Image (cartoon, rainbow, N blue to C red; front, side):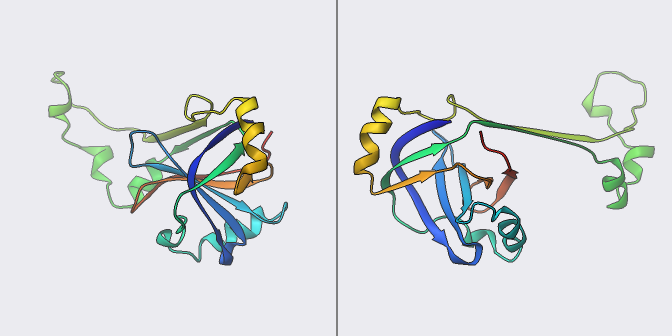
Length: 173
């Protein structure tokens, strides 16, 4: 687990029965949004209900407020073979006779045989500006609000208009 004390936006999203916390990335337009169900076992309901919300309804609407946040470090890997998906979208010629001459100096004809997607998301102390244990414990009693992410949650990496990455952490340690 890691802790951070700072000014963040947070709110309660009634249709999800979840608290929402936005953690902006330093020097970026991106934010990490945590959706933490109020019920310890509420992750499945949250995921089901998430489909009914527009992405604009997800970010916290509140002003920034000073709070203490405690959340787990985690790493999320995803890999998928997308050749069939791309083929089914109608890009069949990509696999037969795609013109890729400008991609290489090699004069031999090139052909695409497979398309893979791999995504890795890791949240650790390097991504956050962690508070020391002493600073965190000193602040907690005075915090206007504390968010302790200690049960299953959903996370999103987004900017003002798009969600780039989403996942869920089932077993935060």
